[in-house]
Length: 297
Image (tube, rainbow, N blue to C red; front, side, top):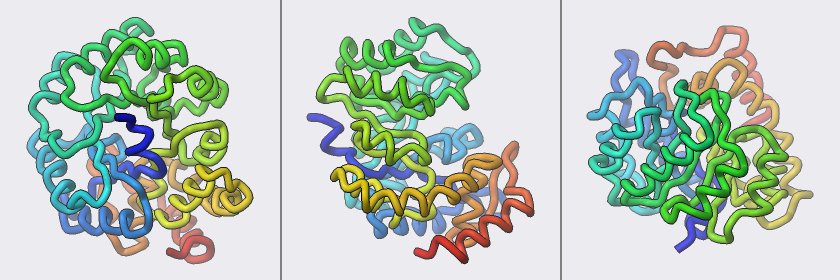
């Protein structure tokens, strides 16, 4: 098996909608799931950082996983996010969370601890041994405070049997190219940066795990498909159509940006759990203007 065949294209890093009382809005979550599947996205990632997982308890995480499976009904693959900076605790979660319908686990590099490259390697090697599903590394230095180097990524890909891919969100094109140049054939490499998805696919990546695809899935996923078929002439206009939207999505905070878009589309309520708050009024106006003048799904 290769995840490169299963998870090719656009994966959506799903948000977690909340009601005004800050409880999970499962009706809205169902709307988001159907919206992205019906508009062409190839797979879903639940319980990533875009899902505000630091503010979810264990019971809520389990409920979201089961609900996602029930709504998806095997229409597309589902990846479950299980990441953190306590290796021992993560091993317990890998053994107890409902992963029976997941095709893989996406696990972010430990945040705040700032481990050495050897520490990162041993962390993932331990998780891979405990996981009943393939592990996808997630490198996002802007959130974690440390980078998984290309050398460490390739070492994990070559030496650890249950490491099957990486979501690369370093923003470092040179690092990404070194991974792509020397990766094993079976090893999935996807972009974690919406802005860079098209150029990184042109370099050889297998797709993207996207925030933007929550709110403009049709054009974004079509852009990714075109790029994967080396049709950059037709992918490029969609890439630039999304560019300002991507700027707005990440101008203040993720997922505050994407929740503002989805609220304006009438799919969710614009509610986040502290310490995150909705976009500032000026930026929210720009979101409304962009949607009304540029992005109409």
